[in-house]
Amino acid sequence: MRTVEWVDNAVRMIDQRHIPWDLRYVDLHDVEQVAAAIRDMVVRGAPAIGATAAFGMALAAHTSGASTLPPLRADLQRAGDILKASRPTAVNLQWAVDGLLHLAEHTSSGSVDELRQRLLQAAQQIADDDIAINRRMGAHGAVLIQDGDTVLHHCNTGALATVDHGTALGVIRTAFEQGKRFSVLLDETRPRLQGARLSAWELEQLGVPYHIIADGAAGYFMRRGEVNLVLVGADRIAANGDFANKIGTYQVAVLARTHDIPFYTVAPTSTIDATIPDGSFIPIEERDPAEVLAPYGCAIAPAHYKVCNPAFDVTPAEYVSGIVTEYGIVHPPLTHSIARTLAAANSTP
Ligand code: MRU
Image 1: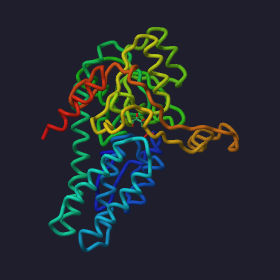
Image 2 (image 1 turned 60 degrees about the vertical axis):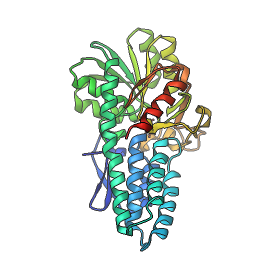
Image 3 (image 1 turned 90 degrees about the vertical axis):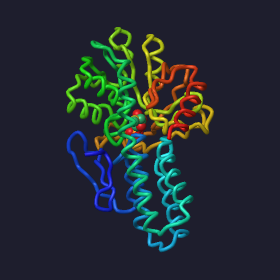
Image 4 (image 1 turned 45 degrees about the vertical axis):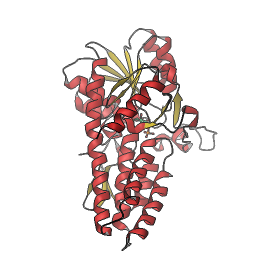
């Protein structure tokens, strides 16, 4: 099944908090439940929360008691505010909510039920497009992987982080489906362990050879010459190519530069936030200290110990060898090539 989908007038998703031990689904029946699922990371990963937010907006329209367009639009505005407040860093969430609000604002004719239907269709389209875009990025990015390579990957960017297929892990999947034979080092990705729990679960099923490594081991393998390529995802890319991704990405980028290893981020153009000039404008989510002190309920230090828990960091564009998008690989100088790619994207019907 897809990570998130619309089933029987509800938003159904995989509850990622139970993977790899258990594959459970949850059905959400109102926008507050959808926002809570995003905040509590039942669903996570930038494109997956974008699609979830789109279905959340469709759900808000579905559950609204409005009988004319103006109050329905007001309900959607409230729903959009609730969803946008759930997680701040991944721009895909904002992008999806704004897309559906724009549709509601610009639909001046037709009935309330017709607008509900159009919003649901738009959300379905975002979900379907996500899969198609991921496959395109997979095809573009697969050229970066050669037989015999070892690819280092951070966090989870696979089917679970998207509607299906994945971004950086999607490139790995496509290369493997093309018959290339290589292996993957998965950073465990403290504190929520998306690499050890989710990426390993996905690669197990795909049959791609992998080893989980402690986050602190990345430099060890790079220095031994055992990493040929680094692939990561992105939660928000600024106009100059600086990008936010899961905490720990920045240090991997610096290590890759030190060891002369190509470092690529893989992300759809919906992850590019052209309204911000550089990464200093990206809001960084600070999460519950309990994630560090007691991951998944397993206490490793007393609950009153002091913690800082930023969920993302920003990697400056100078460390990026390229960005794999659905329109191809974008190379430095990134300010110029990102602008060109967005212009191409906007002129594509
Ligand atoms: O906190 P998460 O698990 O939502 O963070 C996810 C990541 O940082 C991914 O690398 C990013 O969303 C890109 S994945 C398609």
